[in-house]
Structure formats: structure tokens, C-alpha cells
Length: 99
Image (cartoon, rainbow, N blue to C red; front, side):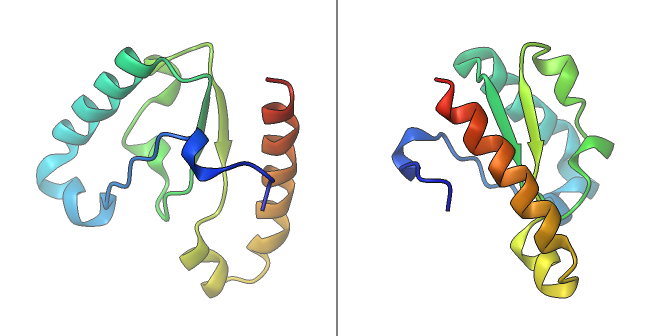
């Protein structure tokens, strides 16, 4: 929807809801390694939960543009989130166009 090929992105899909009780430390370890190895300039959070409650993104990389886009499942439950999703997608597209 923002005019970029999915192959231009590195995607991690973590089911936080299923893993958070027993494996939150492992999730943090995986994300810390991800940030260390790939050193991303943009992080797109589409987690259905508030990822910030579990992971301190700014601690992992302070030179990062962070975009919180409502998940599709949350948009389906609450249609008013569509507007916020489009706002964030437009901001993301503008940032990607800078590269």
C-alpha cells in the first residue's frame, strides 16, 4: 500500500501473546540481536499488543525511526483505527522515499 516491494524489508513475526508469559526474555534477546546485526534505520511495529510494554525499542537503537501501525486484526475490531493506520503509512512512505 506504500509502493515498496516486500523484498526490501526484513520481517520478523513473533506471536507475542503466545510467547510473552514464558519467553519474553527470549523475545527481547532475539530483537536485541536483530538490532545489533541488521542495524535497521526504520522499525515498523504492527503488533496487536503494545510492544513497548515488553521491549524498549529506543534502548535497542536510538537512531531509529519507529512507526506504530495498528494491526489488521485490531483494525477489524475497531474500524476507527483505519485513520491512524493511514496516517502512519503516509509518514512511513515519506520516510522511505528519503532513502
